Structure formats: structure tokens, C-alpha cells
Length: 322
Image 1 (tube, helix red, strand yellow):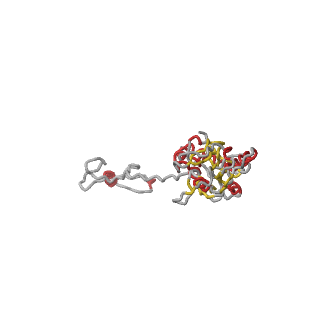
Image 2 (image 1 turned 90 degrees about the vertical axis):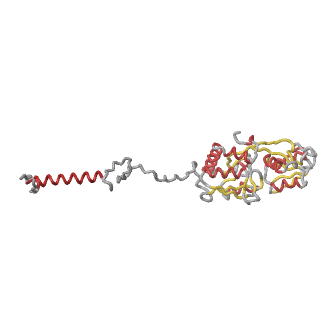
Image 3 (image 1 turned 30 degrees about the vertical axis):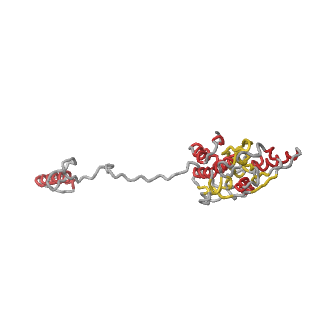
């Protein structure tokens, strides 16, 4: 008999029992490692029709988990001083196609300016809400925080710069619209003395016509007889109804109405006084100004700006930076 040292807690085993125990242990070990099927054939995990009981290797599954989509994050930060969180409230005189007007089919604002400010708002991760505004008071209403910004074919001049800051986005001139064939031969403001002319209130064109009218009287000629209306569309209807011999407005408006009424109207003379138009921001609102500048740069860079000129059939020469 063999015995283990008493240092092992005094346990005794016979040599035969030890041998039998080791044999049984080995049998159990190999049985667990091999795993047999009903036919007694040990599976090796290869081909041949045997079914393996082994678990698949990590990552070997054909059904990969669907990755969690990464939410869209705007590349630009929206200003924090919005009237309504998540919304850019925009003032616009929606009577001035093709830049801003009401789509009669939907009742919603549309036009080049509307599309542009909507795309810019999207770059900031917010939506644009374009509200119809009174052009006569639109800048003062911006100052009173009725709007976050204004986009309304606003020509940039020194008087307006005293009240607001601008992000230039468009080059526009002024032009006369007359009946097709220009029966009275109207080529410039100086040829309007004593004639009936339509113009929108609050516009630079009205200022220019008043200046021209004074020049008429100073030269001993009759003053220009002005019909001044708040709605630009109504002004243009004056010409269609033969109540005036010409209307005076931004050149894109003239071009648009001529295309909308082929064979009816034409430009009287040439485009004059080309100046930039701008998106108006309250004076001193630097975060909003920075956001608008960044958003405009983004829509120019990704091609949206060019696409809108094509969509609205505008003269490419009127692009800022063209």
C-alpha cells in the first residue's frame, strides 16, 4: 500500500483506486471534447454531413446587427435669439415676383427669395416661416422684433444701413416696363414728364421718380403724374389696364412679367442703377448676422444658389460674386 503524506489532510488512496480514477477522468475528458452524433461519428466541424454541436466563432454570424443611424446634425449653429425656437421668422413683402409672391394654388409664399432663405435656414438646422409684411414698415417691424430677418428685394443704401445690417445676395437694377412696341418711345426717367406712371410705395424707385419729377418741373416741364400703390402686383396691373403708360420697378420684376405676358410688355430703355440687395438683420445683432453670412456661403458652395437662378429663370449676371 502506498500512502500520501499526512501533510495532505491525512487522505489515503490505493494504487489501484488511483489508476481507475485517472482512467475514468480521461474518458470523461475525451467524451466532452469529441461530442458524437447518433451515428457515433465524431464531428470535426468540416464537411461531410455531420452536424456540429460547437458554438459559432465570434463574428462568424451572417446576420450582422444593423448599425444605429447617426442623426443628421447641421453643419452650422443656429442663432440663439430666435423669436420662436427652431424657426427663423422671416418678413417679406410677398407681392414682388419672381422674388417673393403668394402661390395662388397653395396660398403659400414662394419665389427666389423664399427658396433661398428656406435653404439657408435648413443649413442652420431650423425651418423658415415666411410672413407677409408691409413693405413701407418692414424695416421698422424688424427693429421691433416682429421678424428675425427680412428678405424682400431690399436694395442696400445708406439710409437703410443706418437701421439694419445686410447680407448681400443679389444684384438688381431698375427698369421701366411699357406696352409692347413702346408706342411712346420711353427710354429713361427724363422722358416721363407729364405722363402717368405706376410705382410701389416705400421703394427706391419711388424716390428716384420723385427726384426725376422735380427735375421735370425745374426744367419747366410738367411733373410726373405718379400712381403709388402698396402692392407691386397691383402696380403692374395698372399698365395692363392702360391706366399708366409705364411702371418702374426692380429689373427682375420687369423681366418676370414680360415672360409671364409674352407679346404684351417690354423694357423701356435699359436697366439703370444696379445695386446689391440684401437680407436685413437688426443693427448690432452679430450672432444673427454671422449665422446668415455662414448659411449664405454654404448654399453658394453646395450649388443651391446657382440652381435657384436656373429655377426662377434669372439673369446669372445678377448673382453676387458672379
